[in-house]
Amino acid sequence: MPKQIDHEKRREQIAQATWRVISERGMEGATVRNIAAEAGLSLGALRHYFSTQDELLAYSMKLVKERVTARIREILSLDLPPREKFIRTILELVPMNRENMVEMEVWFAFTAYFRHKPGRFDMQDDGVYLGLQKLMDYAEQNGLLPASIDKELETEKLYALVDGLALHAYMQPQRLDGPRLERVLIHHLSGLMAAEKQSDAPDRRS
Amino acid sequence: MPKQIDHEKRREQIAQATWRVISERGMEGATVRNIAAEAGLSLGALRHYFSTQDELLAYSMKLVKERVTARIREILSLDLPPREKFIRTILELVPMNRENMVEMEVWFAFTAYFRHKPGRFDMQDDGVYLGLQKLMDYAEQNGLLPASIDKELETEKLYALVDGLALHAYMQPQRLDGPRLERVLIHHLSGLMAAEKQSDAPDRRS
Image 1 (cartoon, helix red, strand yellow):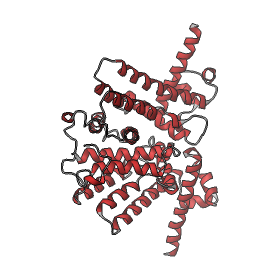
Image 2 (cartoon, chains in turn red, blue):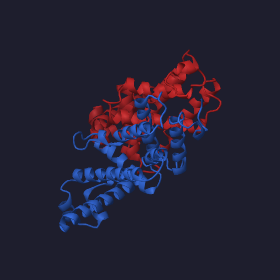
Image 3 (spheres, chains in turn brown, cyan):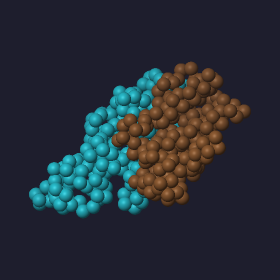
Image 4 (cartoon, chains in turn blue, cyan):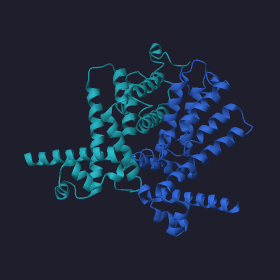
């Protein structure tokens, strides 16, 4: 049993080395050779944990998704008002700090890379859309959303807004930094919840 | 002079062959060899027009931008109400049809590729943010926006929404097709202009 745990832990360390390589050199640099060097392993040792490059890349991407999911689960378990939980979980989906930025870089590089390898890794299911649907349900059930809302369209908009902001923060980190990201998202979410607490949304038109 | 024109025309044909290769095989497939084959040229003939792969790729990307800009300029020159011009130009920025989708694929592949080649091609300046700032100014000058609006934040939101929708249409073309893209964007723009013509925005909360 301890050996099994070591095996999984080592796979995670290799995945983290993969993230660093992708973040620094892009997907073109994410060769098995470079990743082995970054992880401090021989090529043979690396192959013991991952038999192909695609297997390693798919695992590294899966780990990004798991980390984000774990952070969101933690926020939802906190003793906070629903409104704050709703806002804080959505802020987790954009790169507010260096750690999130590396995840975003990896996600973005993967998306472009796997787009032309159908079947190998399903990028359509990155879980964000499904997660946002659940969060919108949560907001609705907790009375945060006005009854008149078109929830389906608003979910699609929020999904596009989150990924668009993440993409821009990745491409233009100087212009769109953490505080600005937060301002834009809170502005949007305040608007979305406007009918609930008008006083919380001074920037709301109407 | 005719020779100069032929030269430029041939460069455009090569750029279009580059788009097709990227759209079908991704950036990894965009080798000089594959592009020459797609364009029906020998490697030597291709090198006559572009001496390096990066020069070819940068030119191909520049041509995408020019085509989008030309289409937007055309819409703005039409005899239409400002409101319709505003909506139609923004719809040009998301992939509503096969042609736009190829441009989006190319843009997206380039973004990921050039992200780790600083200085070679400035992805921060894809022109969309600047273009949207001008369009928001146009909307304001034509009385389409409520006075209370935070124009800067709304421009940032619109920019994220446009690129997020484009990204999702690229990754999930079955789910987010042209009509749905249009619905989401018009829903958002109607909300943005809500104070101007309340009757045009039946889906608007307030």
